[in-house]
Length: 298
Ligand SMILES: NC(=O)c1ccc[n+]([C@@H]2O[C@H](COP(=O)([O-])OP(=O)(O)OC[C@H]3O[C@@H](n4cnc5c(N)ncnc54)[C@H](OP(=O)(O)O)[C@@H]3O)[C@@H](O)[C@H]2O)c1
Image (cartoon, rainbow, N blue to C red; front, side, top):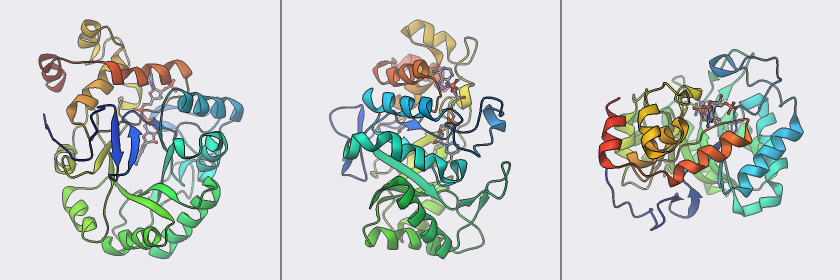
């Protein structure tokens, strides 16, 4: 386990100062799954292609999340071809600066089953301009490069985001699915406030990135934090510890992430108010070092 006396960490262990100046609660909300209709596939096969069929329910859930204390919402221009950003703008308008919205550019969707990196700097700029319009804001709180496109120099892709930041259109820059080497290359071009990589109890391929970002003021934002629901079951790897601490398996899986290091900010996604409140409850779950270690070794 990495311990850090990160300067961006406040005394309140439920808060992280994103980019050193934007306080966010450490359990955010991933809005990717607010898309499509009831007959569309869920889980790994989800299309994330159209605006949610029940828009009113999605708006209500997002507003419930804000009321319940979520301050970091995660979306992307690629989610439902921009409809995800439009939905967040509508739902979160009453909350103004009380909430931060992170979005991503750099992945194009030619069909419901394809997610293709596209890092031409002019395209990244255009997409950021479209994100600004859909989010109805003059500055994006956190803009991620959704994927690095091998067909363009990394410095030019991050450079496009840096230019947007210099113009005041982007507050903080993030990267998604990067290695330590790519992060270091990007940091030579622009300050990086967050890295969003796949990471959960069952998939720890990005351990090195998590450790590298620790203590450097960079948030590590694990996506699929409860393994797309895989850690929620009563017989999953977290169930025994969950029973001991009087929490649900999802809360325990999230608590393991929160205990992993203070710069870890999971963004669980859900379409259910019950699951939303349950996931936020992970902030209050305390694991002993022994329980943490047992989960860590599972
Ligand atoms: N950067 C990237 O490339 C990338 C890739 C993928 C995702 N993301 C981001 O990461 C976020 C999180 O990923 P995700 O939503 O796909 O995966 P996840 O958070 O690991 O799991 C979400 C799934 O788990 C279920 N769930 C949530 N809370 C639950 C609970 N308490 N009990 C039981 N089931 C629960 C949800 O179903 P219900 O709706 O029934 O609750 C949903 O199907 C996304 O929303 C997106 O913002 C980023």
